Length: 509
Image 1: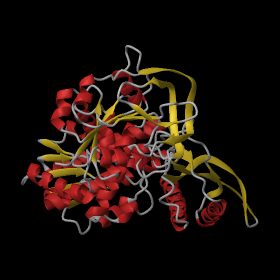
Image 2: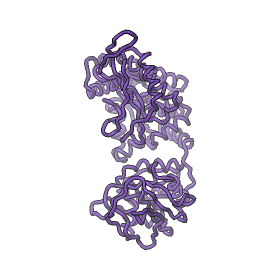
Image 3: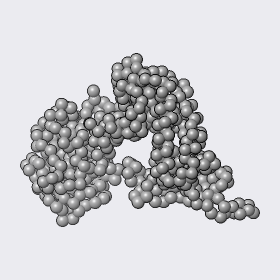
Image 4: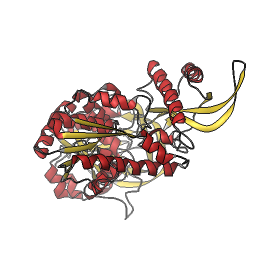
């Protein structure tokens, strides 16, 4: 229904990021394998095609490649990094090992007569990551950008609408990178830009109505961003044909169970809250090992959900919050359904349903948030911090008790409140408190204390695969520390985790 640009993935680490940048330019985009047939590409009728980067050398026999026919379709093609070299290689140019590799921020000069760089400065910083370079251009191609060590930092065959960039325009380190992609989309591909979240919301609602008809829909609502936005969308589409089962395992953040319930109080859905805190804590008694905690909580969640689902009986559709990264990472196509089932902990194995409804499966995480805003979902759910399924169970080191849960809930609430008051809640991508098992000596008033050490964690990241620790100002940390020690019982020491991922993980357990 929308203009389409295809990103052909040749193994690049930024494949999803390229697609996100294209969508930010209001053009719909999907990621496909480089193995996608020419016939399938023709049938999709894309306005443009983008080749991603990749770790290989194009001149090796076993490197990913594609038929030359793709350049004869009359569809504009943009190659990025490996994709640029592959275009040069397949069209008759030369690619060879560079005498000097380029990595990171690199000064680059551009030919602004090229449509790629129209209206942009003739010099700037680009993000390079290559050991090979284009040492000879094919007939009809010209170099339209260069660096001190790379004579072809970008190339074009204007007549055939074939373009390439040796650098990565999709990463934030490349100055005006998104503007370059926008130029490709609008100046070369002649896109109109018909992709918007308001259009998507209406289309998705209509598609759900058409698929569900008068059937019943069941959703396991965690209170996370994806499931909450999904519940809002389904409510708009089918109203009280939807039943949301919200299993509160007692390990959520302070007041969070009540907030989730309140958020859906006025929505036209059947909302079932199961307060199962005591049941979960009973199963976790005496357990300290992180993986055992996870398995116990996962299995118990299934049992609780099963008990509630049996009361409802047969449903026609099971709704799942699968989003586009899940589809891409599972290889799309045949693997998508397997990954979808995995997303709800194996529920399809015993819940009696006819089909699955996944209206978010074409959206990235930031787009899911945009959709939530479009649907009128409460801000505190749309911008909810990422939260692991086992909840605070893996943010309490060692055995879990009700007392420890309450201590961590109170401390974590203060941390989140002060981050929000400092205006940092949108800049730090994930932040939370961890109750360690370490106790140390302290002094409060004239008394000696022997209480817990609390760790604070805050990270910035684009993909959660890597992360840097957030540079929270010292005065903000000082206020957080003072409040927690004074207001929360049993904590007398605060530490801040300044480790990146890798080598550490974002969560502690």
